[in-house]
Image 1 (cartoon, rainbow, N blue to C red):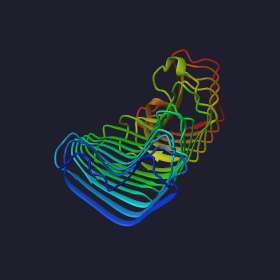
Image 2: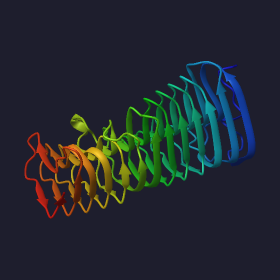
Image 3: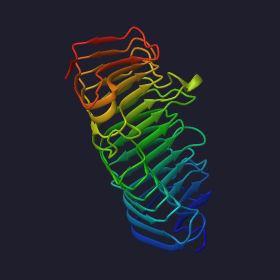
Image 4: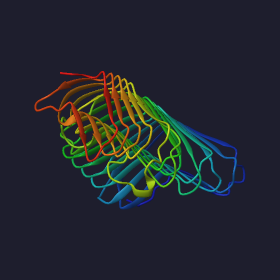
Length: 363
């Protein structure tokens, strides 16, 4: 019942930094109390350490509410290199915070491959990988993770990244279930760069807010944002949220136009309020996407010179299939639109100027 139970710890100044490998283990803890609870605690203060964890299962069950359950925690001024491969996290805890890998502060490198996050808990906050550097930049690589979350009124994130970090995410499945739950696949703010390449999304149970990818502007510049190859159903037809959102949906003030080299392409997603929204950015390009069952199809919001082409926007309703809201210089061309009930094809509002609509098919 102790708040903190550490299976393996590297902290302070190890005599021999070197390489440490942990594999083929199963670690189980039940009746976890309040406070923060770790399984692997990696906090070296000297440089040169590499930690490899593989083929491992971590089981955690909370005995009360209000706790924080963490599988792998890594930080420290020694900036270790950390690799996780085939690690499974089975966490249960209502009204707890459930985190698989928590990467805090600066690491030389981080990668996780084939991780499985089986999280269950009503009103819990769930994060598979959580990047939150307090200083410096960590580059994270996430490949083929599985996020299997269940919990009514829970808040769900597959990858949660805050701060000047570079993140590359490839593949993966995001399978969420929960009435009135908030469901995000990839969520980021103030990143150095990000690429999301592939991924399958399946949200069910009547979520209250959804997004497959939600990337927000911050005080620093995001030098590249590439989102492509996503497929799936977000389970909220004409509901609340976005299929994909980049920039901001509300005025970010001085942080506007801080996401550059922005491309969203080759995605096929359905069931949300907004389809693909670029907000308060300049020069974003959205092409070869398919959206289905949204109130708003593809939208440029208070942005400059965004371009949308060769997209298929299906079953859109009153918010506009091709939408320019504020801003200037938005171009829509060679898009195909099918309208749903009370559907609106081309929609400009809020003082949007100098927009171009060319060779679009609407029916």
